[in-house]
Image 1 (cartoon, rainbow, N blue to C red):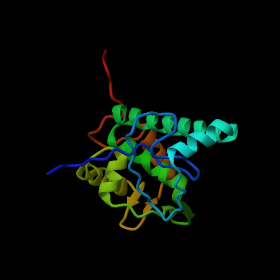
Image 2 (cartoon, rainbow, N blue to C red):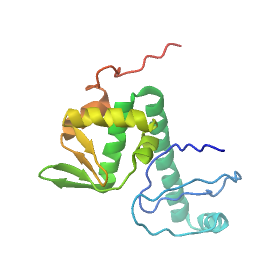
Image 3 (cartoon, one colour):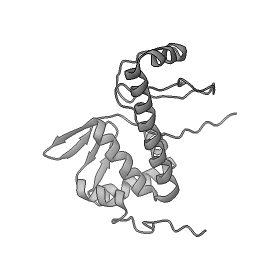
Image 4 (cartoon, rainbow, N blue to C red):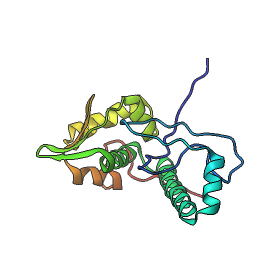
Length: 179
């Protein structure tokens, strides 16, 4: 029995390219999961290469899209290496809020349905650890992860968790690396 684990490298914005990218001989592809209903334009890699070769605007937009994805992936990898789970979860919640939030009198509501397993994958942790950390966020009245949505009651406190200036008891805010 094969066990598959996923690592989320980032969220895609409208117009971003994913899949087998042009100008790379690597045949590996990406796995993408839509969090909300969306439209996807399917184009072959050869067609994108041909179009980019004759249209500098297409080539520039492909390069920009790839650069943005590379930067996001590098930031996520640095977070996995150097941030504790509460800070990584706070980062994921702020990223989700950038895409799916609605500001209400009760706080910031993130309207996206995520299973705990999916949120754990996005955070780079286990479901069990995600449950502990989300319980701490709820007990501190910072954020509440519910079945159908996520509520952020204290945005400033969530940012403090993300920055590492507010920490969960028993967890360090920074990882010390000796070379």
